[in-house]
Image (tube, rainbow, N blue to C red):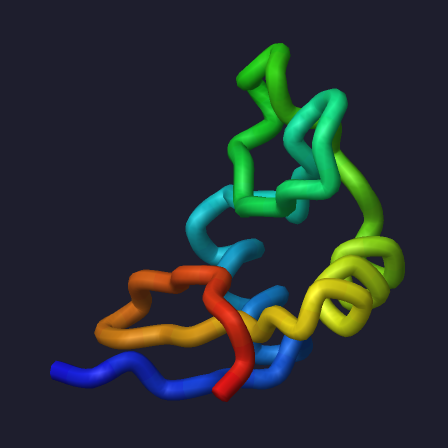
Length: 73
């Protein structure tokens, strides 16, 4: 199954169903999804998450409910 680029709105819906939140890796500009219980990850709001995606040329891709942040094609 191939990865399909999805909107941040769709990513948000999937994340909420899975109990995930957008997060920033402490001390870096890295972003990923988190359950909020990792001390190395700071939970950020969805607006900041979307800005970080745009700034870094990244997008959220999905396959079978599994999401991955990758360079935008």
